[in-house]
Image (cartoon, rainbow, N blue to C red; front, side):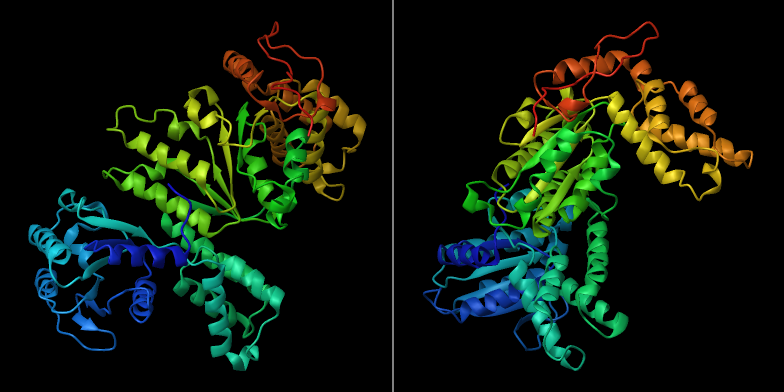
Length: 544
């Protein structure tokens, strides 16, 4: 998938296609009014060598010019009437996709397909150069029309479009805004609304003003909530609210330093330093060691929206819908740029690309690879994988991701920080459960030594289990509670020892250690007498 078009490129593309007498164009968008407005401006400009009329079709109003009333007719009849045009015309059909099978492409009307093909032939070879533009929120073209129709993408509104919507809204509600808004608040509201259509953005601003009668920077949360609902309705992306900070990650200092060095890359003019926007990282390693937490806290660190892509939802049961789903998800991610696109357990979605599904997985995977390589908008991809050896090699080559990090079982120094994070969070000095525990370095050191082989998630669950034991008996948590839960835990380093060893072997010269050099200790890559793998310095030890 090529880089996202901007609105000017959309109009330029439409103009070229009309002048080249491409007879039928398809614009997939929910924003019918934007297409009609663009075509209205086009016919009054000098871009077309011959003047054109603009005629619109809807099921309820038939063929009609702007501002006029028409008579409802069937799509087939409307297409036949359009074929008989005696002067150059741009026909914009808004409801035609219902007769062509809609988003599924199933059960199209044969008469409608034939009418479109007859019209295309007339427009291409006839003496009156006209164009049919089909506007549809989603349309899987019938195979009969695949060589007849040219698809043109209309991008979601950019900063300029949203700024126009906000300015018009502020002016229309001058009694509440005095016809102006603070420049910083203006910028924040526009950024918050990126990813919405013009109508959705206006609705979000209206909701924000209806809340307290004022529109200012404090309403960014209202606009973001509106965007969260819109993204949720897409069914492909999930808007993850910012939560926590990188300080919540015990260890992984090398990875955290790498991310911290790129914090300003999204707000400063990085090009003057000879660099471009960061592309993304792939984080692999032992389950439960902080990969997903890193994605969530990066959103807070960089003050950027986090969108999680569910690869499983991309693949639907309808032929062609999967590719369309992927394109739609990537367009939405770019529309909200700068943003972070998080793909959790990416190997589950792309490990079998092209195997046993008529090439659907391969085509979706190819679209994703092309987008990663050529994307122009600042969308940072964070992909996590537990079984990286299952990923296609072309995803791992340089240029797709800026770096591949390996997250291993925490070292003793990292376990000390992890215990400190979770105990401090749950056992504050003024809480009932903590009266018998002194949270000091001596306690953290002892717990770090006795919990070798445990992942960060297993340490967190040990703290939770100790709290439940105390709660059940209505008493404070004790050190013995913590020690007992550690002893009772059978970690992944035991149950998945062979798998972890294989992953470490893969990462030894292919990935960079997320753990800092100063936190590395003695290690072994082989199970001990109890079958447990101790801490290992996974990945190449590069300092950032």
